[in-house]
Length: 366
Image (cartoon, rainbow, N blue to C red):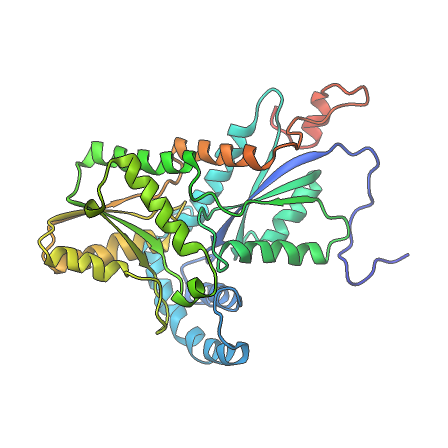
């Protein structure tokens, strides 16, 4: 009997197939190249998401396709070109490396968790990677967003993409979702250690700015907990670093459009610090797990220039967690916490004992 057009065709079910546990590590996304055409494709997908832009749909699509996608791709391509590496987009490079390091850290004599990474917008897509995990034998999948703080604009959008894939899939793996880990002790420790390491190498500034990605203020009024979770992350970081309230600031960056976003904004705050006589600032972006356009170009270049223009003398950007060992261990701890009760071991043969050949056939690292 032919498959229903509602569902994608799948390989026949294999009786006795060993159960496998997998992690899908999901980040926001990136264009395929620093070109106008690639940015147009990426921005069209990103800005068409109703989770990202919550204004009347028809009005927004007219603005998006009639104005924004005609003007913004070229400007954004120049910004991406300024940070592009020989291996591609920094965000994709770091996300891929993080997934590889997480996979390595999860392997052991009694563990063989499959790990892949996916992008909410761009490639590889969440749907593509879920299909790949199924092909690898995954029957249980943990969806692990790269966003420590929950927001409907990011975390919920990842979940939407998973649900959309599931809606057209006949045989759905058991799914779990990590909602947030903004106050997880291992994550806070990793952030604090990254700042301490920077201070040990470069010295300590007069003031620490913690800059988070901004969202429209309306999202807070509608019940989004992102603002509160950012402030909790910052407070816990400050406690670990021994900072008083006057020694650090919490700000929000990357404002888009004319609506009011979460305040205070990062660039005006930095300018005001310089005007008030602060000579050196250090700035860290705790909500970004990987360096990307918003950290390398917006913060390390544009905001740096703003601080120096106002009389500041020394600006130090503290890199994202990227491949910091404490960050990978934090991901391991979050994974273990949310896979509780799921077997993480390698497949067994018919006798119930570990079969090396079976594990190799299933793609395990042994």
